[in-house]
Length: 420
Ligand code: AMP
Ligand code: MG
Image 1 (cartoon, helix red, strand yellow):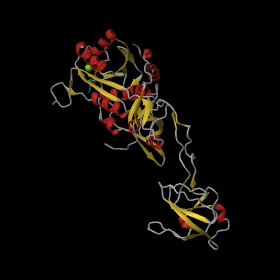
Image 2 (cartoon, helix red, strand yellow):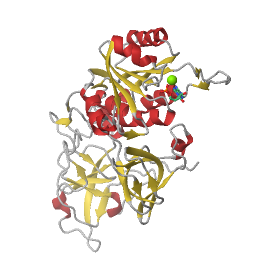
Image 3 (cartoon, helix red, strand yellow):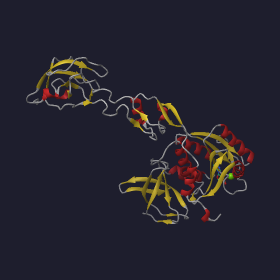
Image 4 (cartoon, helix red, strand yellow):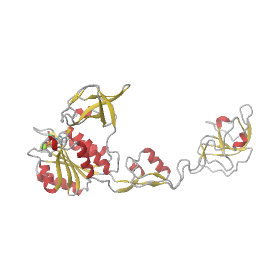
C-alpha cells in the first residue's frame, strides 16, 4: 500500500462512526443516571415552586400598607400569626396586619409581599423570640417582593429536559425536585477488551525473559470506565488463531456491544488477529495517515462492531482517544464526540513526518494565553510521555516542521496540570 492509499484520520473516523449506532434505552434509578444521556423527553408533572413562598425570613403583609413607610415614619402592623417552612397557616392577612414568615414557608392568603426581618424593629434571627404583638416596618415594598411565585422555575406539563440531554448533578437535582426517581437513559456500552501477543504476561506475574506485562488491557479498560461504559476484560490471547477465537467467543457470550483489541493488526508474521477476522469477521485493515497509530482494523465480528488498535501502548492509547472514544460516546447517545480543544502557543519546535501527528504535551494557562511544552521522547513505547501529558497537540497532515511560537490545536485529554 502506498502512502496515497492510506486513509486520513477523518476518513477513518467517519467509517468507524458509520458502523456504530446509539444503544437502546433503559430506566435506571436517579443517581445511576449521572453522566448518561436522556433517551426520552422528561415532562414535569409538578410546578416549581409548587406554591407561593417567602424568599426571606420576615413578615408577610399587604404592600399597600407600607406605601408611606420610611425610617423616619415607620408603619405599624399588628402581627396575627407565625408560619414556618413546612407549615401551613390558615390566617388571612388583612389590611393593617402581618404574619411572621420563614424562608420557604407558604405566603398566607391575603398577603401580597414580604418584608425582610432586617427592615423591621423585630429582628429575631438566631434567637428564640416570642411572636411580637406588633411590628414597625421602616420601608415600603412592591407587590410580589420577596415572594417566590408558583411555576416561576418550572411549569407542570412543560418538557423540562429533552432527549439527548446529559445528566449532570444539576439535572439530577431538577429530576429529584420533580419526584422522578426512574430515568430513561441510553444503555451503557459493554466493551470487550482483548490483548494479543505471545509476549504478554498477566500483570501479577514476575517478568520473564522476552516477556512484558499486558498494559494495554488495563489502559483500555480504564479508558472505557472513564467514559462511563462497561469494560469486559477478555484477558490475553497468545499468537494463535485458536486462542484469539476462544477469547472473542467469550466476548460474544458476554453480549458486548463493541470489541476492542490491541496488537496483531500490522503485517507481522504472527498477526493472527488479522487471520481470524478475515475468516470470521467482516473487517478491513487500514493504514491511517496518523502518528502514532498507523495500523487500524475496523468492521464487525459476528455482527458486533470491532476495532483493532495497534499494539504499541502509546499508539493504542492515542488511537483509542481518536476512534474508540468517539464510537463509544456515540453508542452512549452523546453528540459531542471529540475532546474539547484549545488554541495553544508552542514553547518548543516540533519536527513531524507529514502524517497527522498527536504530540504528547503539557498545556498550561498563562497570562499570555495557553502554552504547550512537548513531553520529551515521543516514541510509541514511551508510556511516561502520556503520564506527563494533559493534551495531544495536533500537527496537521502535510506539516513537517512547526517553529517555536506557532499556534497549534491541543486536544485536551484532561485539565490537570500535573508534572512528572
Ligand atoms: P504488534 O502490533 O503485535 O506488532 O505489537 C507492537 C508492540 O506493542 C510490540 O512491542 C508489543 O510487544 C507491544 N504490545 C502489544 N500488546 C501489548 C500490550 N497488551 N501491552 C503492552 N504492550 C503491548
Ligand atoms: Mg504482536
